[in-house]
Amino acid sequence: MTEYFKEIWTASSAICKGLWITLRYMFKPAITVQYPEEKLVPFEKFRGALLFDAETCIACNLCVKACPSACILLENATNETGKKVAKVAWYSIDFGKCNFCRLCEESCPTKPKSVWHSLDYELVFSTRDEMVRLWQKGFDFVGMYWDRKGKAYKKPEGQILIQTVQARR
Image (cartoon, helix red, strand yellow):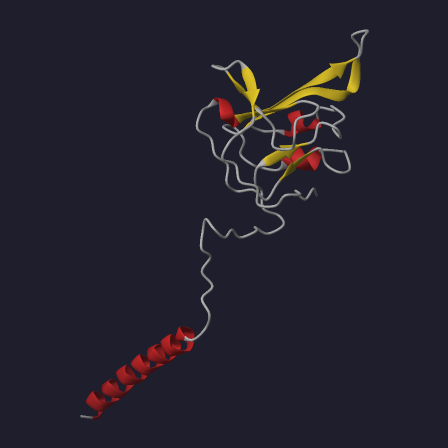
């Protein structure tokens, strides 16, 4: 008989504990983010989309050598005599191959970094061409892609920037 009442007591106390937790959280404000109208800013070490700055790049090829998936290509700029100079003519990253390991960013010797991971986590690709981002002098940090059908460089559409000024590490 005492076991019966003991079991009733433990079950009812467990129910009361659960209801107490529910009652406590019922009056707290909601912390739900209304995505896509509101977006969270990821933590500082987040590895988002790679961005590139052609102005600070010295074309040392260290990022190309450090990349384990061989998704980075660059070509040195040349002067009028045909000799290579310490500037980049064009730079490309294939996001279809990139595994976001951050080795290219760590190997970059420039201050501020010429290649870095942004906090952007919404990359939109509608074709394979859009996955290969190209940079030349004068292109913005997001880069352009080569449209094979239109035979022209195009700015990627649909990419939403989390922050307007991207932090470089």
